[in-house]
Image (cartoon, rainbow, N blue to C red; front, side, top):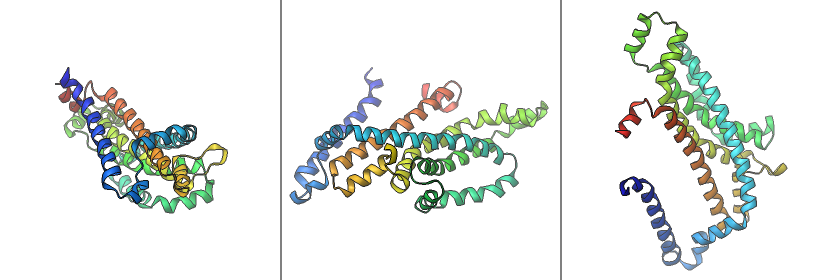
Length: 264
């Protein structure tokens, strides 16, 4: 029982030690005139309680942008990965442009998006999509083209059509790669939405997200509220990543080797 509880107890213990270290740094290491830069944990919790409605509204806005951008990236990455897996020539023609899209900084895209679709949720969704799309399409494509050659030859010997080979062999074999990309994208999606809020968000119609709120708190020098915003952002990221880990386990744990080895 104790051994099973260790994976849950150790993170709690580590967190308590970090909070204790936070207090030590705050009250015994930092000079008195600099302590306002690092609010105590209880001050952050007080700010979290006081700013609760504002933080909740901002979190809903950011979560909406993150989810919609993440969902669009997931769907389109599957389509693109299936297309890229058809031929090396297709990959050679399209992959450099995907790289160019990924390597263009969001800070450059944001003013263009504001001109095209305006500030607010639409821009946040597009920015989240751009950040999440690349790891998904690259990992899924790699999985589709990395199918065991012996199994491919076996399907050909059985006169399987390309459609059967793709959806009965390559797609199931690519699922672990797909979920690896999905986990990466799930950690990037909230970050992309928050960055989108900061660069292209606004508060019109109550749509101001966590990134926009952090800029307001920073400009007003409300440091405990700024730390509370960081805490909520972290929790949102954990929610996205945890959902994908659960989905990955649900789909793969009964048959994939990595999960079978963990269970044995």
